[in-house]
Length: 94
Length: 141
Image 1 (spheres, rainbow over the protein chains, first blue to last red):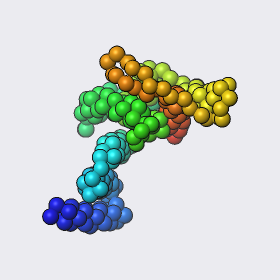
Image 2: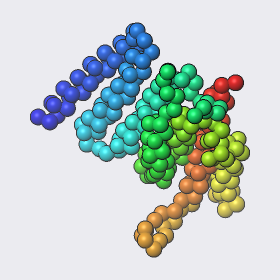
Image 3: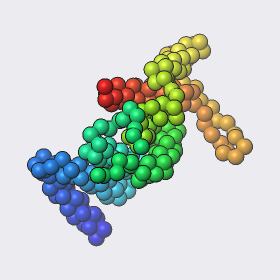
Image 4: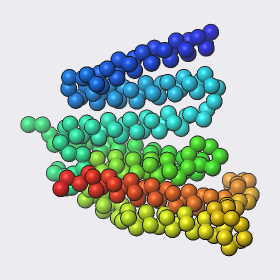
């Protein structure tokens, strides 16, 4: 029963990732693409969690945290670029 | 006129930075028997410093962390080569590592490896090289 539920959930996540990849490639504006990339990161986390349930292992738990941190850094960098035009400032104006 | 300060980002990153650095230290020491090690720990530390660079600016971060990353890379290479070359003096092949079990007061039975020092070298090299690349690319002029 649980196995079927997990496989259906994995299928749904894969389907939603196809939609997100379409949005990354087609997306009319850059913020659409950034949001889609962030959502791809979240979907990857979900897929890894479900995979570690299927494989009955806890070796992938660090990977989940790692992808979460990297997706956060990427989204923050993109947002700052869109907002200010630069990522690293030499000397910021207060 | 939109306000130009990013107080939400700075406050968030003040909290998140310590979580990321703690996680990188954990993943560095988990290295030998579990997934992890010097490379990914160094990448996580470099990610934390990049977050600091995003929230603040290059000048402030160079005051907070006054490291010369090129010297850090050389130091890491020295650690790695020194640990691997140290095996030659004990009549064993290059890169052989030694380990032993030691009883520490609170932590109990711990296996100490010389591979940790090699991994520390890898960690320093990864942090140094990543930060050199990012600072070279990221400077605006």
